[in-house]
Image 1 (cartoon, rainbow, N blue to C red):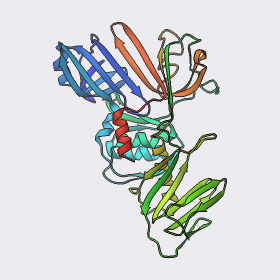
Image 2 (cartoon, helix red, strand yellow; image 1 turned 30 degrees about the horizontal axis):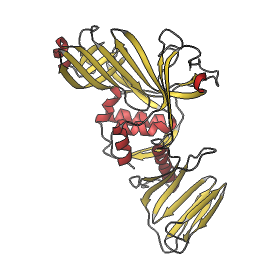
Image 3 (cartoon, one colour; image 1 turned 30 degrees about the vertical axis):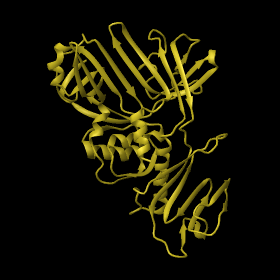
Image 4 (tube, helix red, strand yellow; image 1 turned 45 degrees about the vertical axis):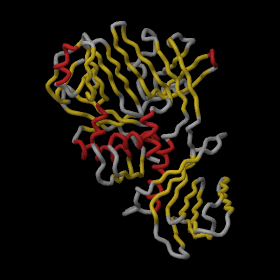
Length: 394
């Protein structure tokens, strides 16, 4: 481990006699670190901007001195994108990886490593930071991104990542199974909550112009204004839409397959239905009037609204998390046999638990007493700052 006074140059001498280092790697959010070391290193720390550790780098953001010890805190290198604001509208249509590559290269000049991902997207974004937007955009695809400093080449690199399936239900990748039976788990904590869960979103876009009696054709469907109530009741079954309402505002309906599109009160509204078999509907209203239809077709605009709905629903998941302290002397081996982002199996016969979940966080702890890793699988409870951010952005 050593410090850098610039992310690409001027490294300090390696430092091995620190008190403790907690290095937290995350999949759907930016990781962080906390380093505690002797106060004799204060001059080195105060002159540095970055911390380099085992192939990863972190940005130093806070330094505190107390009782002859220096505590250094910061976030991993993905946080560099938190400095960059999206000041003009980004329109991203087509291949997800190709589009993000163009955006990152344009905003940062970094080297982008591609992996041949084939996912496609239809979205636009104005405002916010690149880091926040990328995490929100990629989560519905179960993808993330990594930023690292290539010390040998003296360049910053960026890539999209998608964790591997390491469950027992597949045979392509090596398996990663954590079980109290296998004795590779020291302790296990399981939490499950649907208090915040949402699975059905109404996404309201921009206002549109209309006449007293318009007829709009989209693809092979003809959409006709119906004279209905301001708050009609919708009943959807297969491809049948029933409307129960009284005489009031104009509303436009377009129902095809399992997707219902509505234009109501001069706004385009798309419904995103993620209700799983056996679930009851848990609805969410998404105000997406910031998304504009300039220079794109109505179909593309609807796809853009749908993508926003998927991103917002991803902010209201089921809280199902397993926190595991693993035995470092048993298999599978962290960062070799599995890594952050991979889907693994967790079992505990004592509580009749069998779960396949994505490894969303790994907290690496280095102390005099030794090295340990605490793992979090699945979606844990929101931190207060994340809850406030989510609620203010509805």
